[in-house]
Image 1 (cartoon, chains in turn red, blue):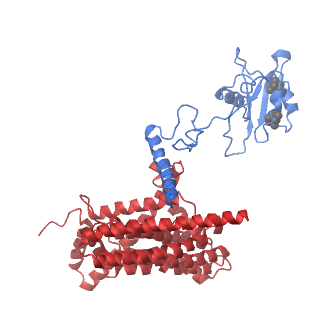
Image 2 (image 1 turned 90 degrees about the horizontal axis):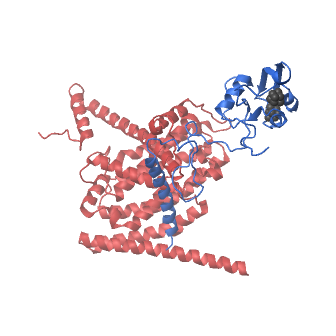
Length: 388
Length: 177
Ligand code: SF4
Ligand code: SF4
């Protein structure tokens, strides 16, 4: 028997050993139950560790972009700061507003967090390292990912606060708008890969090259739409501090606020991980073990999100919706048509890839030209109005 | 092309981000300290590097005419306090922060008790202006937070603070008075 104890499948090997050990003295159904529960616990742990790391990283990146140091007092280089934050959150007083709808107020953080954590089930953390290798993995991700909209709406309704309610409206308007381009981009990837399973999509990229190289236009579209879906700047209209204070979690404090915070960063991690899976070849990569590659790529993508957050100002809600419906959805449809035709008409995979790349560059230039022309026309109209 | 402005903005923040790390590495072992007593803060907006002042480790020196709490000055020859307990400062002070008691006559008169209530002082410098012997001055010390209500400072403490702040003469930082 070959040696299973390589770094490559370290985690799988631990699982196998544990399962064999349990099977020695427990009935089979109990072993399955325990192993499934363990997987859930591990996924939750990954979620919480990711939140600790990401909240620290967010503050450090924000600080560095603004020529500051960021947290650096507690622990070497401020590394223990997330734990201090967590303790602070846990011991804070839990306030429920007098007029709040208690049931939905208390339910909302749970829905949001559960919806966020459930997306982890289909993330391919490495070769053969996916909690549930569903054959409709991507569909599941998109469906469960939008579950948290219900939580946001519940929070907005339950807190009985105007700002929270405005945020809930925005959540519905914005997230539903951006669900469409995200879906269109995912369909393009699925057409190339020929499967909805996350593992198969990664394996298809081994064969055809990373989809990021094949379809840069679709990738940019997906990147923008996904950042709107993850409520990241510049599309974080739901928690626009300057307009509606903190949006849906304005009335929350203590542990419930922490749950919203947790959900936000879990979404960020899951969204970046999905982007890596769809466009950057998932866990593919030389030399290093596959799960390490996956983590490295995910953190690079997360860094780009943080970088963008610290560069651009927030845009208005009408601009968000306008870009969503007038630019992204048509561009996504055109991209879908291009991908479909090229994939069907050209049998040779290499030539298809090259043609796809050229078409995507054309798509980027075309969209950019049309947007620039619309902008110029608007400016000219404004000038004409000023002259009159 | 439409959208190139976004890339330009991204490059600006990236350059600033890298710039902070570059300055960090350049002054590596003393990361939280700036050279000498005077933190150098670049006035130009195009320079890179962190602008934070790491307060307990590095402090910004106050500008020359900053008015902090009162200090007593020493006679450079004898090393004794210059104050002769004439009571002019006590009379000049609009807030009544100063209490002076002394003994002896003429030049021999020395203060036995000098109380300065920093908690009530408004740093108006009237006492300094009124002193005929140039015996007091306002320091540039500013860390006045304390854990108890003991805000009445006596003569040894005022002298000690004067030594620490290296103030030897009235109007030292004020130009000609
Ligand atoms: S500075 Fe003004 S308030 Fe303070 S002790 Fe002197 S005279 Fe009194
Ligand atoms: S005015 Fe000057 S010399 Fe007179 S008591 Fe005050 S500090 Fe001393």
